[in-house]
Image (cartoon, rainbow, N blue to C red; front, side, top):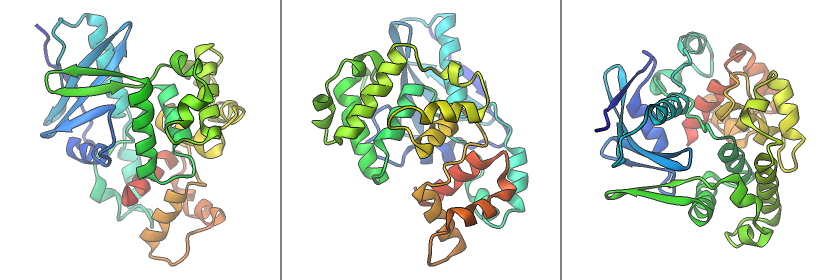
Amino acid sequence: MNRTIRIPVPAEFDFSVNLDYLSRSPDESLYRIRDGRLYKTIPVGSSAAFFEVGAEPGFLLVRPLDDEPWSGEIEREVTAYTREWFDLDNDLSPFYELASRDPILHGIVPRLHGLRNMGIPDLFEALCWGIIGQQINLAFAYTLKRRFVETFGRQVRRGDVDCWLFPEPRDIAGLDVGDITALKMTTKKAEYLIGVARLIADEELGREKLLEGDIRSAEKKLVSIRGIGPWTANYVLMRCLRYPSAFPIDDVGLHNAIKAVLQEEQKPTVARIKELAVGWQGWEAYATFYLWRVLY
């Protein structure tokens, strides 16, 4: 029989705050939330592991929902995924210390204490989400992502709970542009998604390769890809590759959040944001994530 896996969490962690963040769209299909618990499936080898995530003081509780007993490999894969998803290996105490003295962050962080930069461990998923979300509002981005996932991904069900697995790069690499534009995506986005899928399927692009150098070399590699500009690159650096200094400084949501916090009539310029962000050095990704949460 499968055992419940208990994963220790840092002091600066609040499961309910993170669950609230994950609840922000009814169009999400890669995981489900019911009665204060999170349900997720991930690929492990040629199969899929389905599990429930709950919490008790000091721990996340991962309960397998598959009929067959999990091997040690599956337990390790699911544990590693959960730790990465919730960014559990990152000590946020230095961020909270700098935020307490920061004119923008000091009023935000206490309200969101325990929120983690919820990750997207799979590079292809992160790149696709970045591309799909380009120049549209968040609600429509979620709608398009759901269409993409439920058209080309795979549904997994355990009892009365279902989750979807994100499409595999090799499956998207073989599509025609029209297959994706039928979902109401633009031709350009369809081309970008297929192009990225082919790079990953052909092993010309991968998470490990991007992590071999520093953040600048990773960013340079990403922006060299058609359809990946500085915003999308930094989104991936922040949510998937976990570079703490990733900073999508051109993001409209970031600008609007700073405007709201400062209670100003005009959005700040990029030059002003650079001035305001001087104290965030080394924590730009978390500062951005917390500011996004002001709006979304």
